[in-house]
Length: 438
Image 1: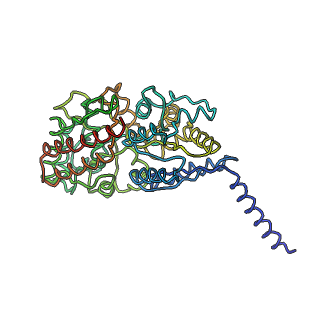
Image 2: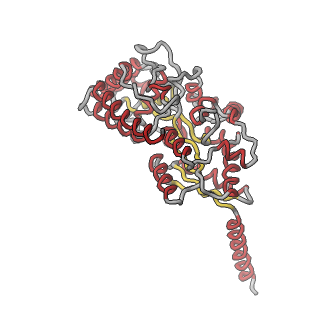
Image 3: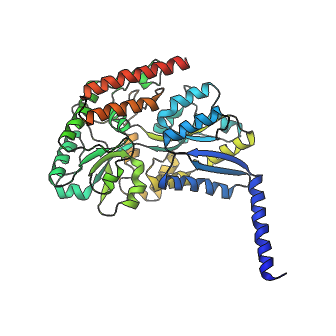
């Protein structure tokens, strides 16, 4: 046999051995909604874990955006083809909890207990974990990517227009006017508009979105975000649009390009855009700061609330596979992995240890203002109006809010008309959810 033949035979044998080894591993299907750079890091977590495990194989699969991923998982469960792990955004929490009451969910606290893993949920940041616990303070899903909206700004454009970084909504409006005069075509915009301009605006000013502690205290909750403070805030933005100071760019992160290319100089959206901005913005200096305060409503801010998602475990799989899920969750929650995730993306470090590691690494010195989100979330002890929300059918209700807000931006409705309609339509879906889960 020639040397070439020997090498070929060896290579074939090696591949066959690797395939057999992989086949012996318990496989776990992990459906996520992280695209682009975030998806690359999520897939890296799975690959790194797989490389270090002799018994488990995590198959990370991108299934579309948050809504698409959640919808696909629900459909798969009904067909008996569900993944082990599904990433669900925070507004899907009530829906997933209701599914848990019907036996679809394997709660994380029980998963870890059954796997014999000493799991201390107190290591997670309170502002994060309170969103995903049951009435007995037991963790239902694993916090993974948590963020909060911040005010991103183009420092180069602000300096050129001779304006300081705004801290109030009055200052945002005045800065937008000066930016417009200085040639910035779309001075102000935002993404995830319900999250940033109704949900977080309300929490930031300690105003309830609804009754029953924003849904945490019971299914009989009703919306109240058609109050004067929110209505006046939305009307202000609508009026800014008529003046050309605000330009709407889409429901999710669609207007990101406006900020990256310099068309927009002030943009409210997730802190998790940091990693992408650091890579893509080369023509100007950018920064982030806390959300603006509406001084007509409050003297000081309360705290912002999180967005992002957690990892839910679905029932119906083998116990050996669930042991792998528990082990993978422990890996994801480690100080090293969470600090890396935070520093690369701008998502909040979900554990105190990861935050402390980022401090020790000098991250907040080398990358100033990247702790803005953490400071916002922990600014004050959360109140019933500022700890978050837990409304049933809220994925669909956000679509209603989007429709009504778009009617304001287009000039078809006043803010009062739109918010009244959003509350009425939203309450109908709350009653539908209550009737189905009572």
